[in-house]
Image (cartoon, rainbow, N blue to C red; front, side, top):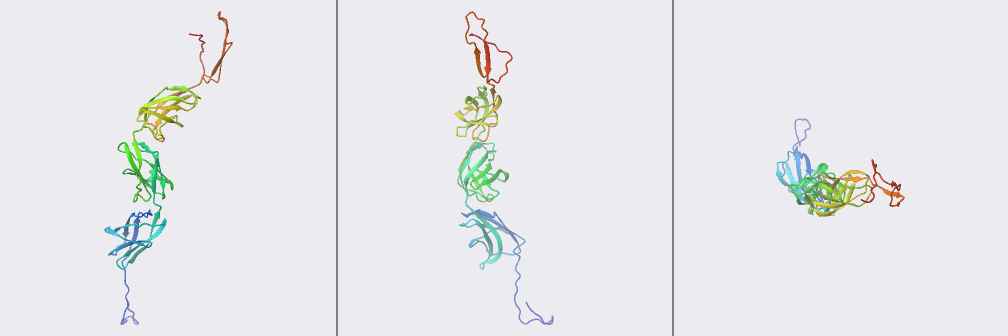
Length: 328
């Protein structure tokens, strides 16, 4: 850099000013990961004309080397951290650690853990609402993985820090799969291997008896069908809201205690997990009670001819014609 007093003659000595190549606009994905570290972070740049000899990612005070994966793309592995929250992620280059960018932020969250799922099984056709129980759940875009199939978007959501609700995907066949969750778009999944068991959907063919008395609790009904599973969640449902526990007899036969209801016909379904109900149902009819009957007088001569008054109390039926049968 030189100076002239007359616009013609320039200074005998000059200074040095260096124009550096633009660092461009940098992005990172994912932008968050667990405290345990190990998250593979993809870094990319748009609009940079610089050439980098050795790029480094600096997480707060922790520096890691950035691996080139082609063109203007790099990968850094996040180190572990002790505190949740955001840290400044700086990029430096070369042996002198020339600063490239210093305005990126990476968020650390508590390491997630899965301890259970409820229900613990569902239909191979999928669609079961599964509550994943654990710790360290956070963020607005979780993912649930059933075996190798991922549920994301509107099929997974964080309910609380200890519950993630997932919609199970369809499975290729019956059997158990591990359920894992990710809090950063699928980059890091838990590794707790809690099992979810897929099975065939229960089917109801018929019920025996198919009729009972209204207003009476505890009438035993045998449900005949297929693909019933032995477990604590095995249930029968009478109508839309009359769910009761079922007693397993075999894969084709369960017994249920019908809840008290008013007169009318209801559909009977069976669930193996208390959530998903049978694809077909049976029919059970609650008949109106005949009430309590009385007669007066209750005795008369063997010659007959006694006028007997018969009356009903508490009955819900209408009779078109009533006959009295004395003996056989």
